[in-house]
Length: 488
Ligand code: NAD
Image (cartoon, rainbow, N blue to C red; front, side, top):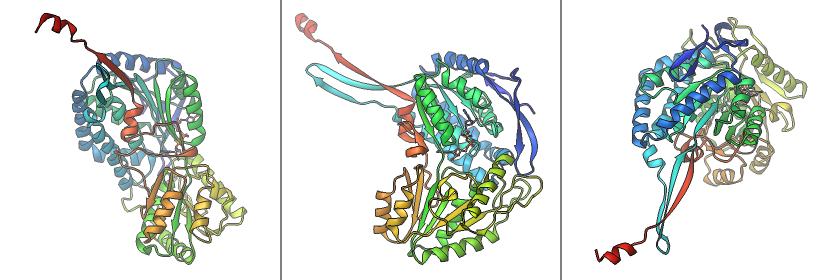
């Protein structure tokens, strides 16, 4: 199958020379090929979006919400189909894929409230005889560039809210998982949304750079690695665009001696090995404080022994699937080798065990690592958990704050005072207390800090509405002198 681009209402196969394979990561076999678009294809979708903007931006907010509600109904009706498609091209388990779709639908729900979310403010008599009113207006043609690890949720973080605000949108999904994005767009058109309001191009750096440089694009939303997020932010800003760019992470989990053991281990297993560790909110550093350390290490080691690893489409009992491709597998195995070479103690995993041709990495646990080791500093983006043993809470927080990233950090404790100190002192934007993956739901912004986010206004929530709109203030003076002369 050749993955098409969407220009207005037309699905077309672009005439490009570069194509790359799309795999089923559980089996390692090719299931499609995706075109690598460049400036010409990007220009075509920008023109389509600019034409659609003329009508869509004038459509009333409730009418836009009604269309998005029809889209939500379509997504619900095709929920299982979308989840299966995500599992096929990404390799995560069906349960994880359902979460991917569900979290995305929640953003569409949120966007359906746009008539309320977009309201301005007013102050009658802001000066003598003058009333002040603010209104939020769409900014124009927007673009979104998304990563491979959440094929439905991340695109749905972006375009439903951008469109609800009256903009039009060009999506450039990850070239590793383009099929889910194409299916979302098909459902979008079936739901009766006007053609051109959402368009799709495919590819890698060339397509991204064409979007960043195109003068017809007003705003760029990006989610992916820190290296590319920084490039997108710098280049997009240089071309006069509004940019929000979410990057990578190295998230810390602290276990205190008073944590509830079973719930804590369940949460850590989900956070570290869920989606084979390929989540920007994955727990990748575990800090056991005091006597909690050895206990939690042993519990996690035995929980790893019970995990079923396998083909996520063929085996519904699989707890963990493959990583996205052979390059990711080799990079993760190399990081594990570095951990061993640096002297960390390998408790579980580490070795490549070929399985049905898929891209599998065993769930891996290190103990006795130091905060300066590569495995404790760098994002590995795979099923690798590195354990550190801080002396006390203060040292744990100090180590957590040495990270250049700032997505998530969590603590497991039954002490309110400990939780409060942690929440106040840890330097990152999304904090969990007895929650393994503190990824905010749609009403809140996805609030990465430091090198996990470049920009000002984050995706989702009311920050998303601010990002996709600009404010206008209208000052009005209406003089009543004429009426008085007429004696009305
Ligand atoms: P990636 O940065 O390799 O790719 C993301 C997007 O950028 C893709 O669409 C890709 O085509 C494009 N791209 C890749 N290289 C490029 C280049 N040199 N120039 C321009 N564009 C380029 O990321 P990925 O491997 O798809 O996803 C994993 C990363 O995304 C991890 O670092 C993860 O932490 C991060 N992520 C972050 C969040 C968040 O909210 N902070 C959410 C999900 C994933």
